[in-house]
Image (cartoon, rainbow, N blue to C red; front, side, top):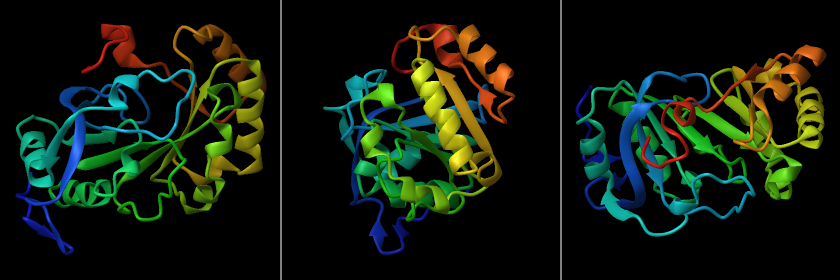
Length: 228
């Protein structure tokens, strides 16, 4: 990978920092890059409290690291892909220069965001994986639907489905916003241990939806534990 600069659009990477919950190397468990070796940068903090959240440990704590130190640690792993996640990574403003610096260093970068934060400032080279919150999440009202017109074929939209009501809402939203024509992937994911994957698969097949069903590969391999 290319060496990164210490200055980026007026941001000093050695002085500016982010609070990091964890930084690790594993297989990507979700979305378009599932199965690919990936470095994960999990930022601390999230303004949402989804009922099915599997990363509550990232709400608080973490270690403050300079952007330069984050980049150096990322470069210590043998991966071409980097996923910046949370929590809600965009809740920390310095997420934006971090994403740009990772792209400048030659990485293929994805951002996992709740969709409750504006995505317009995200580097155009980043694949934005926007998790639209379903009714059973308890956070449907936080969705910024004005983000949708900003998305393109490089981006992905994810729905975590907890029950039939969530599925019907996601199906309606898919059609209302013509998501399958706007973004590269629309992902339907069964809420872990809440909705049987086979049930979701049968609903998708019955309706012939133009979506990709996904299961969380990392949980199938290692269980519901952090750091994988």
